[in-house]
Image (cartoon, rainbow, N blue to C red; front, top):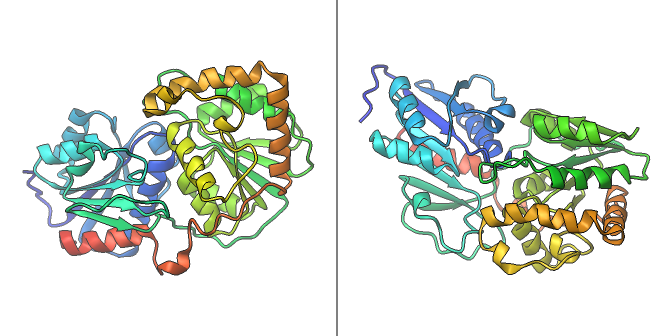
Length: 368
């Protein structure tokens, strides 16, 4: 049990470097906590790499730690006298909290995806699953289903700009750099025929790689903090992403027409397939629309990520399929193939977003 020598509570927020998604949700929770003006509570964000790359919440202390090393997180908890841990899809943080005898919360934005909820995802004192229209799991003890975690500090001010958000792409399940996937992205972008400006956003290493591959007068490559990304999104007339659920909902919160590029991981693949099942999209939006998919690669995130390079090779070596994707991208960028997805995310159902629901619940249960 951690003994806090100070009179205030110290909350450690920690995410998972699986692209940018988990950290984006950690940012939303941090902002919601700060909005409550909890005078006797300090907030710390622990992380490294992709997790700290986009974190931009003022008045939150950032501490460098390998967020996937239980020992390192446990040591940080001890040294900083942490009293509570909020984890976004990071089982190591919950295990470290258990080891130190302190309370923890686990936010699982992909609960709808798992065929069986991983046991490590059920260890926290408070557990939050994100609601989507096709959610069909019964909540368990300590589980609360909440609205999507969407905090958008801007109003839509559409300009003649297209935002293509690739997310962080890199993740801890694959040590290989996603060269083939990025080569495909570059080929498609080089085939862009429109006059509107396209802003491509991703992690620092991804943007640096693409800068070497893309030479187009209307394409601009940027690494943006989360708030900067949302500002660009609010200024865009069309939003394209590779199947990120929260990125899609952020765009829908601003009523920005949204399209999908080929996904870079299994969660994105399954999200797009769910959208297709709801009859909300058509055209070339997923790998299975252009090539035969071997089902064994759909069994786990790790196996699918290794499969991406094979799929990219099939496309890059087939001029006809590649041209189909280039044509689809040009249609999307023009706004002709954007989709009405607002039924996925309708804020009128609830008057607060999921991060506020979580924070309100924690204030009550943790007596913050």
